[in-house]
Length: 253
Image 1 (cartoon, one colour):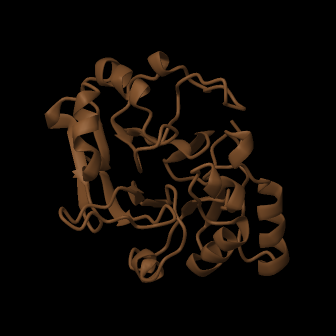
Image 2 (cartoon, rainbow, N blue to C red):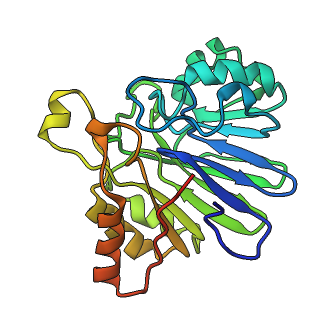
Image 3 (cartoon, helix red, strand yellow):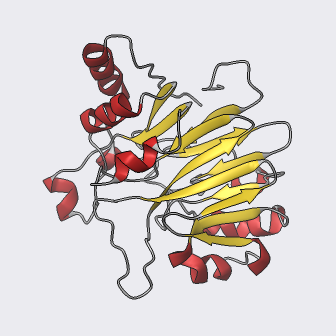
């Protein structure tokens, strides 16, 4: 399922949770793909890790297994030896331990940008309930990305809640064609299980209402039974509150 649904030469496909493939004629990007088997999963990986090849860039937003899957990154470091791996610089040692060549490991921090061929990636701090900036190094462990490829601009929010100063940063990039937001929220039960939170579906909808992307896509709702949400509630809230001014697409694999 190509979520962009337009005539431009870029496709966006869902891989479950916050995982996506972005493809053009010249570039294939894999973002936050959780590809390892796990009894706790509600959906199977759509592409086995050892079958995912010809990827130019792997992106990880933060060091949780459903975003940076180290077991899969160990495989991809071998099966995609020329690929670049982009991630928060705070996790450099762990990524190098996965076998990623140092020349292919690109650590970013809030405000950094990197250009790889015709792809540009901008990093913005994410608040996975908290920003958790290291006071010594100044590094943020959670990032969100603005991805620009062949005239298409995608906002992948990783895992985040809204924080002061985030909206001006997002607006500074201009029109967003596709915005991918976590909607699983947070509550007392999950806190007590050390499961830190994200935007609720209402908060995610209202953030998109301010950004006004071409389309908004809910993520982080399908993988784990204890940390899920109903994407139809998200879409219905958008329909009721924004009265057709905001287009929501619930992804399918």
